[in-house]
Structure formats: C-alpha cells, structure tokens
Length: 341
Image (cartoon, rainbow, N blue to C red):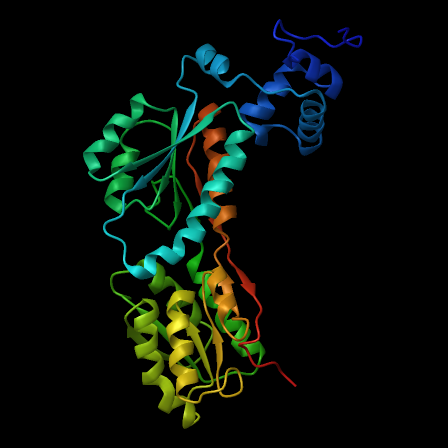
C-alpha cells in the first residue's frame, strides 16, 4: 500500500515526530515540548500539534523517551492507604474518581505514564525514588509531606494548604466559606448559623468557618458537633428551636454529607426549606441530587486542583522550582436558598 507524499513513517508504519512538526508548522523540539512540558508552548501551537497528531495517528513513544532521559518514564500518584473506612467515607469515592481522571488527562498528553501507589508506613515513601521520576501526593499528613520534601525529587501535594516550604496546589477553603456567607447576605439573610465539627483538629473545617464568619458583623451561631450524616442529624435537631423562634434564618453546613443529616432532621421536624430556613452545603457531591430539592453548595473544584498540580509537576521536572497555587471554589446555586422578592 502506497503512502501519500510527505508521510515520513518509521519501519512499523507509524508517523514520526518530524512529520507532525512539518504538518503543524513547528519545530520537532516544539512537538517534544507539547508532550513533555505543555505549558511552555503557546496554546495556538499546542493545538496545531495535537490536531496534527490526532489526524495522522501520532502517539509518542514514552518508553523510548524515558530511555533517552535515563529515567523511569513514570509519574506516581501516591496516597496514604486509609484505615478501615466508615460508611460515610465511601460517598467521597466520587471525588477520588474525578481526581484520578483529571491527573490522567494531563499525564496522557505528556511523555510519562501514570502509576498508582498506596502506602501505610512513612518509611515506605523512601523507596519511591527508585520507581518513578516525580510524585503527585494525595491525602498526606503534614509529617508525611515534610518527609516527601526531604527526598530531593519533583513532587506536589494536593488539596490541603500546607507549610510554605511544601510544594502544594490547594483549595482556598477560607474563600469557600466566604462565598457561602456572601450569598446569604445577598439574599437578605442576616441570622446565620454554621454546622460543623472537629474545628480544633481539622484545619479545613476551621478555614471554612472563619471565611463564613468574616461576612457578618455579629458572629453566626456555631454548632461544632460531629461530622457526617449522623452528626448532621443531631445538629439539625438541636437547631430546630432557633429556627422556629426566628433567631436563625440560614445555615451553612461544613460539607454535603453532614447536610444530608441536617435536611433529614429539619424536614422531620416540620421545617420548610427554604421557606423557614435556607441551606448551603459544601463539596458539590452528586448524591445530593436524591434530595427533594437542589442543594445550594460550594464546589471544591478538585478536578481543577489536581489537573493544575499535574501540569505544575511536569513543568518542574523540566525547570525545578517551588510549586504553590491556590484554587478558589465556586458557588453552585440551588433551591435550598430563599430567593429575594
């Protein structure tokens, strides 16, 4: 079978990098950067290269590239293996799946392969230097992240804000809490409460509360109980009297899972949502769609967090440097907030 003119191919009949460079009207080095360090290439050139690659069926040889670099050719997604999961924790598997897809979409367009690894003991982290070229860290404690920092290899920790010397891409939780408070104020709701838990132990919960409270001259009612559906139910029952006597007209709930319990408690007690009280949750988890109304919530934007972390990590492999980026959550409107008339 004859090939059309200009179709430079290898012996196995696959298009070469030089061919893609010619068709995209860029240099071969630019084609290489598109797959190794995409942020270093202008969006217009990157789109031309990827379009040519798709048209001619070009797939970079990641194994050969790794050999040329004397590297493993792998990016590791490293997570601390959780202890026995509680019934509530399984609901967050939706977030985990989105995270993996976001990382995979970035790594797939590079010269690296993605590998997954879990660990139980901090000592296991020492051995990953022999297995990969760089690491995306998920759910590490402060101590584990500090240990990762000492290994002298490219890495980035995700989701939670950490010490300033730790490479991290994180959610601005203070801004998320402030979004909730701002929405209540915009709707003329001036008697807020916050249902949360573990404030002294959980920095994420603390930041959400601080951001929310900053929106009001008088500190909102604070209910620092237990997290999760059961904890939300208990806190919801405890706030019923304050709703009925008019001292609470709106509640910001630390996460959607806890919000489920709050909703059950309030509806069971005859509280109308949003007629008697407005609610805003946090996380934007899909299971809230099972509620009889759409729950207003704050979207974590974790896919954006982990995609940004993967892009930053690829760039740091080429040009080492600190990584510190915050991602602002987004407000998702819902029928649980009373609309202004």
